[in-house]
Length: 200
Image (tube, rainbow, N blue to C red; front, side):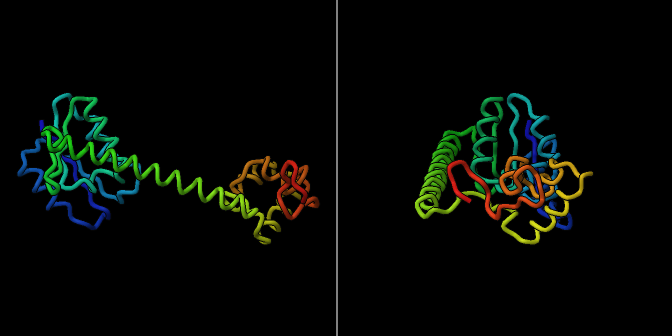
């Protein structure tokens, strides 16, 4: 069975050109989402994947209507193969049931892995550079902002506010909070996070 999936990025966009192409291809059931491709929650895509059975083919107008990125596309392709389903893109003229389509997906997979390796290498190199320069690596603490320090002090001074709630307000854990405010005391602000073996 041919199952169609269409998606437009905004509610005011018209998916009719996609729907028409899917119908002309012979899709007997079509699912349509409205929303950005970056959104992970797509109820109609989830419904389409649930609907697919062994031997079915999911047809899309273009791969960017289906997947968030290349890795997502490869993951879907692997899942389809595991379930005995096929994937067709009308615009790219790729059909995973054909030898050519399988080859293209193999190349896509190699490219995705190559990109992941490059990203890991860049991240490691950046971390080494920060460490060599004596800079901290990672997200900056909210307590580098004097305004946040004033708010935190006011919250910590209020006995009715749990320390966990203060930490949650600034998107940190209680351990990180206590590095800046030892003992959770508003009067003990260090001006720099305490770290083992590091003077403050």
